[in-house]
Length: 280
Image (tube, rainbow, N blue to C red; front, side, top):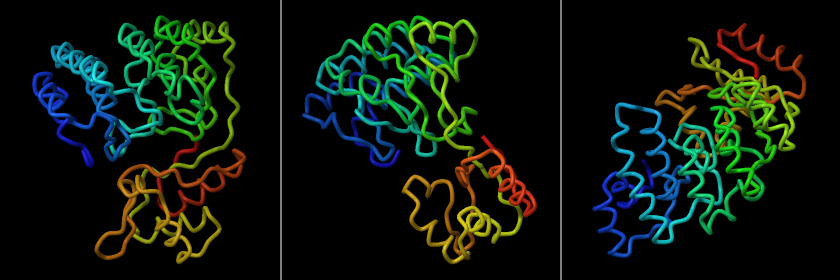
């Protein structure tokens, strides 16, 4: 992944990781996705935790995690992405389904600087992930460290089918988990916007610019200028090809409307131009 140093490449090999640590490797470096070496190790751990075919790698990854912690590598204090095209989440959320590892991490001195211990509003937190997976024990661990709060997502998530404003209560996997969260004082979220997502832009290469122009009440030239100002991560979702056609590579959140009615009207205009659209 872009921006990764040699330390990231040795996460699966504790022996090699120890070699670079002994050489004085930078353990606080962040890759292009915003991950620290520890955060990257946690994403690898979660991948193996979820996939029984590679679960034999977990002990080695756990050794690497402990090595990083013992040498001063702390959890990131801002959200990151597991991959360039994935959505922002906290590093602690990557392993919220593993109660033992979660408890180990929240007991570290650096935990106080994480979004979970402060203002976790806006992104997917460990509480969201534990709730979505029905991990009651993990939720209790977070509660015991003051990290169980009704943090609300700033924007909808197509990947997780959640609306803007979702709290852990809204994403809970079952009623039992939901009741447990409410017993800890958490509340359901209030939908803050109705987001229109384009999943396919149709056959006409001009359609995407036209749809962006429509959503923003702009001319096509103004829409092109808007695209140019999009944040860097959007470059993996839409980009200009060699013929100056705007290509959609991944679903794009087109616009956040303040009412469901406005969102549905915009979605219908998009569909009339051949786009595939969802409203969350």
